Image 1: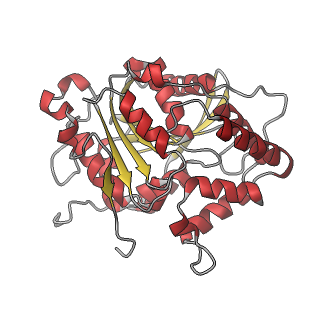
Image 2: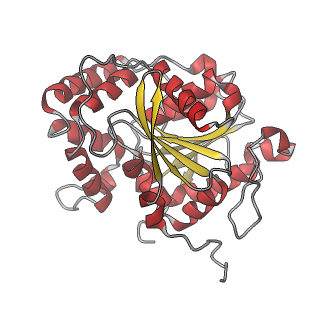
Image 3: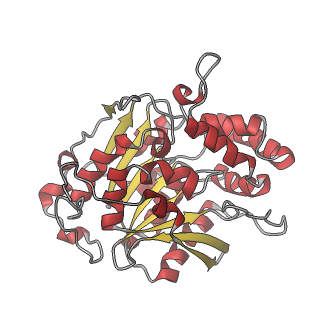
Length: 346
């Protein structure tokens, strides 16, 4: 088969409907983990945002053939779904304590232990990005790289804390409908795809709206409650040594957090990509914008798309990276935010 497009033949439906589901018992309750790919390959851990699961948070990215070939060729994917966010989940009993963000990070460590994983690559979106970053600060030897999308890193401001408190009350009494649903859609997507009086909602927003209809409000309440009680990671970020690639939508509510995070991380090992005309959920709204930066980022670990080179099947190790590949310039991105506009007509 010709490889002029730089891609391989991949059945993208199998990516999301052919994985193996595992129920992992952690210190703070059971988690659903979906595993895709060859378990002999390096591990990529994913963690979604509030009220989402891996299908609604990462489907756009993995249904992009080039991104799918890049990630599945090099990694075995372990999708962590927050407790109670899996499809068909029952309401979690009110007698079960609400976990803290530290508990959520420790759950990630339990998942790694369950599968016998050592050091891993992490991919998280907003609240999930916070959990994985916190995990990286607590278990530094277990994270070789972070790919973060519209991440949180500071404690909530008074305005965010108050806004989320109102949202929590609405969630508690009414579930994920009405104003709560609209607030979550605004959290995820830009106005360009949410539509207005003249332009209709895009298909990705309609699909997300439908998914939220089936979400258990009590379970979303628990996750949002934990994230609303998060602490500031600023000081811990200064000690983080793993390479970090940050994406943020130009119109994301969390744009300031992403920029702040970049200024606190070691500038030798991090880069920020700002995606124009996009909200927080870059993985769904403009997944094409993630491909080239991720390719350059993963080259630093000797990982390539299949048409370029054979990728190693051994555990990822930052010690095998040549010094020149540790520089942000080697990733093809600058230390300051850059603009990456993807035509919606493509």
